[in-house]
Length: 137
Image (cartoon, rainbow, N blue to C red; front, side, top):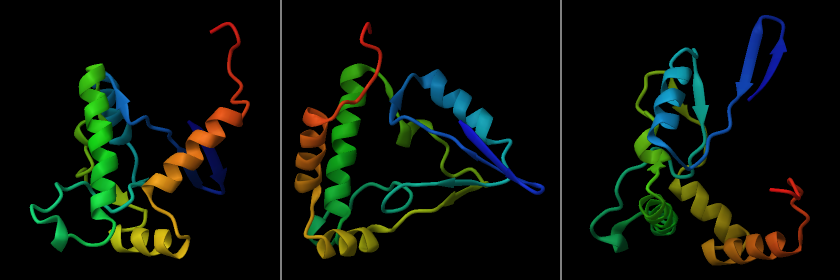
């Protein structure tokens, strides 16, 4: 966590992982209840199951559902809690502060990108980047 203060206003940036122990998310929910306002990022808005008829889904929904599906499978395989199940996004102090599904689709189209191109780019960066860390770890 990093905190910033200007005048009488304090802003804390809280980093959250996608997968963790159930107790991690329980503690996080307790911690976040004390804030006046929690702005959270989640492309597409609050999680909701994809529509039964994917053809009628708004642009970008299928791709986001695929990413979430991979994360769900990883949580099950690792026997960890997935953030969408662990974080209480319906808390009264939570406000979505990210692009919605149609904005996401428009941004990806404008950049001629999709999940595949982003994944390939991320893997390329991971292979060539010095990510630091503890050499003894």
